[in-house]
Image (tube, rainbow, N blue to C red; front, side, top):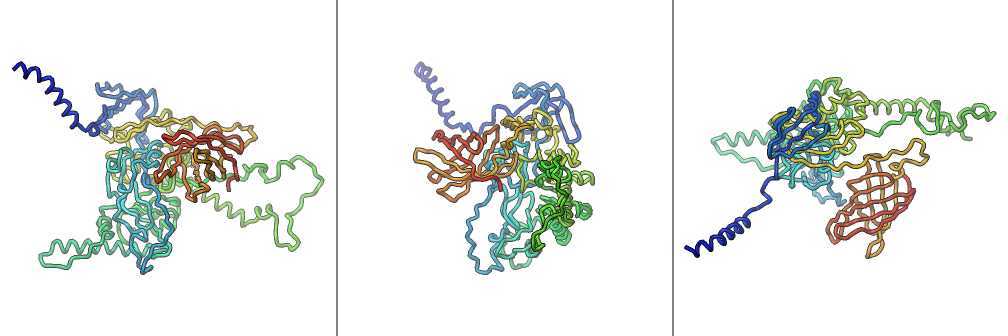
Length: 595
């Protein structure tokens, strides 16, 4: 007995070691899934401002929205200090998480170009968007940092890229991010060069054929299943089988239709074939408004706006009559002359061309088109048409800037919030779960240090299904003084720059191409030793400083390289930092300005 008593502590310790070896700590949940956000201005919905209060989150859902909530013992308390809480935004349609496919340039070898395989011409309705999403893709981080919690993701491609998935912007894998799969079928009037269907008319004809064949296949399958006598089995066709839910009203067609002509065609096809339709990436709803209202078709308008039109009066060096200000007030003694012509009397001066009725009419049409595009959201709100936003061709970083332009054109703040929350939630059929801050709803929200639409607001926290991510608040860019004769740094950046990186293995040279404008830069880097173009990400512009991250290929492995460049006029110096390899000097000079 005495020996057993001596051995008991050893047996106990061995059992603990054995037990700990069997535990997989990765499967255990976070320390607490309960949060209390206190003392925060709560925007429960686009039209319901609760005022100062508290939000209690438990296990991914909103437990309570009230005042003076007693924090549970296990709660992680966030003192909001009178910050602002909003429902997380919802992207009605986007390619978030799906990287662009590389164009290898080789034309597929097809025996009959008039009847190519479906994959060659982008007819892949069987593909599922969530299977193509990478949880580590940079676009997910950008969406979340701009207030989004859920995205309706569709595959990239041409005519029929595949089926959409509702994805939460939280999770270590694409499977963890799935909220709902097979939520839509994505269609575009976009053919493939060199193969049928190439033209818009060809795509429409092909779509009719596929849709009707899918309907016939569904009927044949139903008859075969219910018949007691032997019937010939229909041939398997994965594309047609994937379209069957749409023919039965179980899956909505989301169709990209930007211009009025494309919208006309989309509505005609919908009426002819009889499926449920949502119009996406819409830019010209005005001319087709009557048909849209008659068919009660939901809209996702483009979040991308054209560049702002400059008023003729705002042109540098011109007064409101277009005269040269340098000559203003000077008596040259010369009489006003008519627009000059050359000897052959064929060419007229630039001023004469600009004053011609044709040019004036063209400018007026462009102005009206611009105003209609920017004012589209306000027009739809006035007409009582609910709409969300589509992000197929736009970046979330410029969303607030675009919204403020839309609001300047007449869109209300409530209308802007609705287009990002309640309206897309209803269009996607999930308004009972997301879109507002209410008890029982999914805990998708963000905390801003000021009202979201104010110029100086920053998103500090984003909650997706109750999981919190703290956002990095970048310092605001210093604006150039009004009396500064130098061009603003953001504009001076634009153009082509040479670069030289000094490494232990020698010097590497190339070109940096910077395009875009404030908050929407595109940076492409090309090495003189390699024709491959690398696109920068995580771009940040400060006072005479530019930083970005690019992926470099080292021995077949992609390594993130952080570049920080300090500018002095038309020259820069800085560093390129690689994980585990330290920093290397980089310098460069401007080659040319923007095109």
